[in-house]
Length: 191
Image: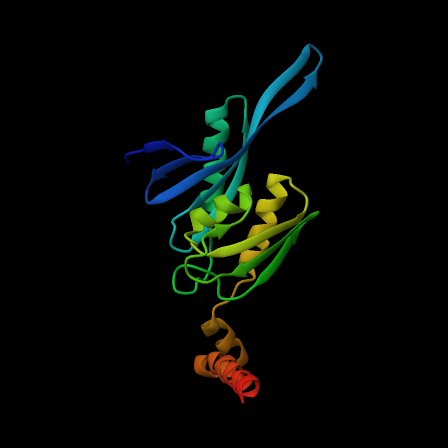
């Protein structure tokens, strides 16, 4: 089990092991006031993904930074979810998510758009393997709430196959309606 460490942008830290990459989203020094003074510890927020549609997040707290990161990474690996992706690069549809005061809007994007998102959300999308997405965070700037709101939105994503099964229809009926409606609108505008 070889570990390869490399530095990421914006204070993020990437590590690859077992085909998973983990990104350090935030690290915070916290204090506990006791009789003799203060005891300091570190709280870490980590996002783990395989860049092929699976992603998870975790938080850990310890007296030393590496131990906090290790705990957060272990928790993130246990909480991984699978997200359906369109053409392996973007979301199938636009989706909203919220957690506490954090609200996020995730929109699918055309090829070549890139990841247009703020810091904590960018780490989630890079770990997930999404290359084209437009995301906006509304409300809190707290990294924990932003990541949890992003995961709430991602858990609401559904592929056309899942939607067709739920409705008892064929995938072509689900996708075909949009194409024929678009063609009818185009004819009405041009004709």
